[in-house]
Length: 617
Image 1 (cartoon, rainbow, N blue to C red):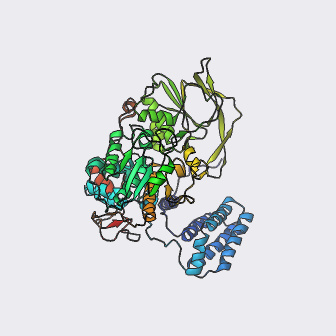
Image 2 (cartoon, helix red, strand yellow; image 1 turned 90 degrees about the horizontal axis):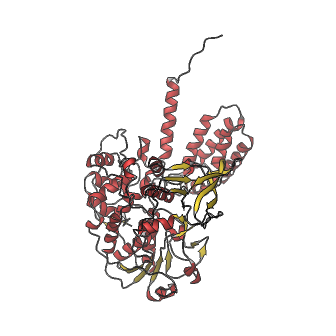
């Protein structure tokens, strides 16, 4: 028998693995706005380096595609070049011996179809139609409201918290809300991850607002009164954002809110342990300080005590519809009408009105895998439930909730049953819930959205004991009155243009959840900001929102790898017994260190974002 030895990675292999990791970090940090043709060429080169070279399609075909794309980028291409690219890619897909060649060609074809305008722009004008580098600051581009993130990070690092709040509020009048509960899409493409890890942007925003509460930082002065009046239907983040900016522009805004308090899903959809009501009120007080008029407990409709859309048309110069998605959705299973089956919307709405349900010593089952499902799960634990189970028809990796929310729920004692599709609700002779029956699943083919689709497993149904079942599978809008009034409804949502305007209704705009379906807070804020700007234009004006905060320059020091500061949390065994907030703000030392990690992409590596100290939109 020949002598054997253990194989260990040699220096070359370790170097190659390190280079792959560097490449992965660069790909993750790719900001919107870069030339997609150039990016596709880079990906193609990586694929070409992975080929074994045994088959012609990979060895020759991918090299030929690389040459053709280079010709396009360097101005040597023409329309025949584009046709050859398409034909060559199809030939490689049809004849490659392995997935390397096939997937490389397929990836190029998908990109070619999506970026055809960019290819043609290089052919016709020698430049990408996206103007590579112009304003492509990753965090700003990824933020739906386009907040000046490098600016306020620098201000937080300098300890100028009130100025940071003013700069944030120029684009987002809910800085406190986003400092505590934003899903921080701005961090996804942060270029800092080329060195180590993304900046903790949300944590720095929270640091600013904890030290300079929104209701203590004066709002800007309103522009001269225009004499125009705008009705805002809905007092959630989208509606109040539009009201805030329109009021600053000199238009009198009047908010009509169906519920007893303002805030929308910020109040009626997010538990206190994540976003305390007192902190929400700080943002609302600052918005109302501009002079926004509010009518609570006022529904839009034709009933007694309601105001109709026709009346609003007669009384106002413009209308912005920003109703939230407060209608629950059904699972559609047998027994769903049993006593003890409630919706996540109903549960969180009652909690928002300070009516805490009695879950003490009960078995609670949550159906769903999004952030709302996690909110219901963690709230149920805090309400004294004996056991809380999450039934989700896909895998944990497929859940749409933030990873930290899922991890937090499990740490607090929740049981996650993945690949369990709800089948029916079992109830007793009195019609009360006793259990949820689920169908075991196995993971199957990838669907059109890139998620693995679950399929029924050849296993018997499983029984999960339950006293309460909370359905958290999505929400819808209450659109009947609007539809009856002639507003076009498409797939359960109001049909609006990207500007927020309704194509067939003069002077009526819509945005937020009622247009897109349930989405994030920052997307609702962005919709309100866009609507305010376009309503202002519709009324015949062109006001600009500015901020005269002077932002310090970044010291020209070396940026060495440094760990990311994460937020401290109260220990799981303690926090699960209270509805009080459990996330702790950064210390001054932590905030300074985290702010110093910012690479200031607005100054280095990209086109300059700001001119002087004036910031406008």
